[in-house]
Length: 198
Image (cartoon, rainbow, N blue to C red):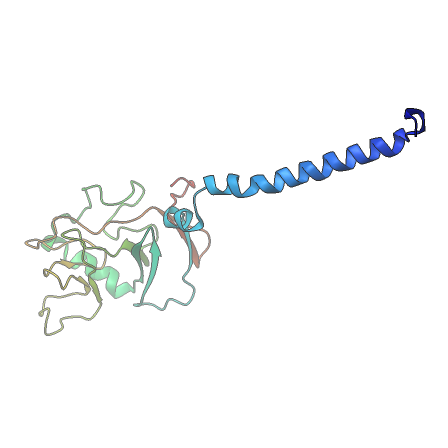
């Protein structure tokens, strides 16, 4: 067979098809290498903002979610709970939250964007234990002056229903308020400020 008998159309088709198949194969082979350079889903989730639907949270109840490996408490505060915040101001270390334990846009004694919903990191500022939610008024073990709040069983620190620490406790500061913002009346994002920055 001479060189004149070669079908150049078939040759071009075979070269193009081989190039295309080879290119697709190289692209598929690169996917695992490129993917291995990205953070894992677990790593992304560890620092990623968390969306929370709190539509089923009843007044006076607490919901716990996780963000960055920490428990985040959402407490639906009643009018009586909000009133108790004013009643205990004189007994607190930092009643006006002047220490930077919350984002700058969280102000006031209720330490929240919307007074009815507290969003707080559930870790004691003493040695990192997790306090318990004690909304009951004047229980026997906490005494007649207890207006409801959080009690740390590790070393006895007490916090009010805004996460503000009582005076003369092992914990030196109020509980930390994470960055968050509302998406709707029943959904919020923890880990992002209202402008969407972490």
